[in-house]
Image 1 (cartoon, rainbow, N blue to C red):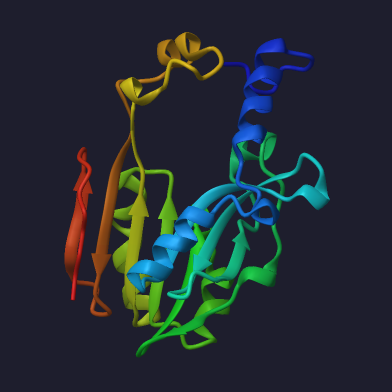
Image 2: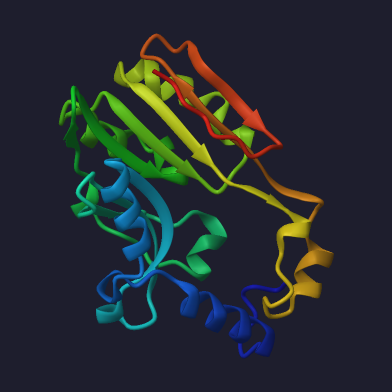
Length: 217
């Protein structure tokens, strides 16, 4: 869809919609999620596109960590957008490279391709991380090998959480939905969520092509 074309009305319309839909934490856009975490006494790790109002129109690929009291404990902005993502997302920083005590675990996480970055992983390992969450846009090609590697290298449990996106999921109210549908394959992201043990063995192998609630003890 010619994402890098200058002065494109198409790209301006898509980006304006994207920015308007981005999560604004200062506006408490995640209030329903925080309330659900508080009610269910659950920790939530949520990948989202974040718009920081104090930084104008800059958008970030962010991993938001919410504790069981419904409080936002951490926002990790992806350190370096991958390839064409740099057309849309701004580079993050290291402030979000933090781990947190969760019962008997030390919890940390990274966004998408930065799970492949050794120094980002090392920053979490150095804090004693033994429960790693890797969030992905969704493809088993990303999760099938790396999840087991993350687990064995860090001697931790590794959870890869991936989206499932099909052509039919493009909603009609999205600007230029017909153009996007024409450009996309039938399955854009096939999932691949999985959980590996510190030995590298699967607790739950990659789930491909379907939505499923995945639970492991």
